[in-house]
Image (cartoon, rainbow, N blue to C red; front, side):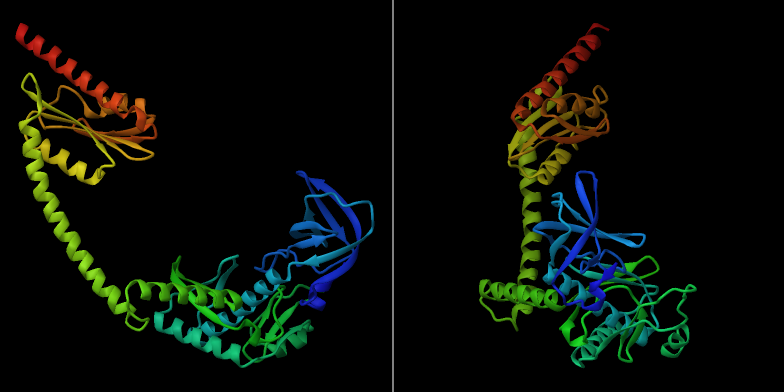
Length: 409
């Protein structure tokens, strides 16, 4: 089968003969006598496009054959017009060549070899076998972009074993009778690769590293090339422009303005926490003084609409620090309901965990905890009142029954 994508990776349309079609899982796998569709392999995703108007969603190799997956069974004709999604193809070509260039620059600078490569739809990553520092990564990026601008020719070679040895000092394993495809970027990089690449480094346009992090024993670098990098720059520039207008400053003073506002926010949050703690103390004393008493135990039953669950926790914890207190709190939000049950130390008459697991079924929720404290949430906030009332009545009945037993002794 002719692999037209190797003859001319810029070709967008071609005509071919259908050799075979088979169905699998309600999709049709078409074999052509020749193809411009690049199958998935070499770290590069497959091409997409059309065969006689039918959308090609996946292309793969099996043995010596290439199959094109479509949802519509082709008509009983042998000759078909095909076209590939060239924008996607060219994007992948840019990313792939960018990977070769960046990997070569990193290896030249740090002797860190690329041991993994993933070309995704949003970004590309390379994995290095060892960790390198931030400064070296920045230098490698700068060197890579210089190579891009140097407009170096990219060649595809099929050398013999003896020619291969002359091309590179690296030992490249070659099976007997195997034809090795070599991608050569001037004197920068020579690598066996079955992927597709532009014919010159200038077509990569730009290489921008956007993230790097420790990965296994080495480091993973995420980057963008070509139109992806340009689009990313435009998007970030627009975001910076919007932020500058919102903060009434220009792009050069934006960072210092954000730092200033961050400091003010942290100060305000600290003051807010201090005030909330003071308010909580007053609220706790008021709640304790007005709490319903069942025998000698104060039982507090409250439902907070759109309440702050964290603040509710603080209140409950402060309340049960007093002796003989049981707290039955519900917190209702737009699409969820939360239960929070607590009791003072020494009140061993009823487990809050068991009580919550009974009550929470009314709001279709899950939760748990200990004998002294339990909480959970559910989706049915319409039944929150019923859930709290159920828990309250169970606590009330339990306290009264225990009190009767004690009085009869």
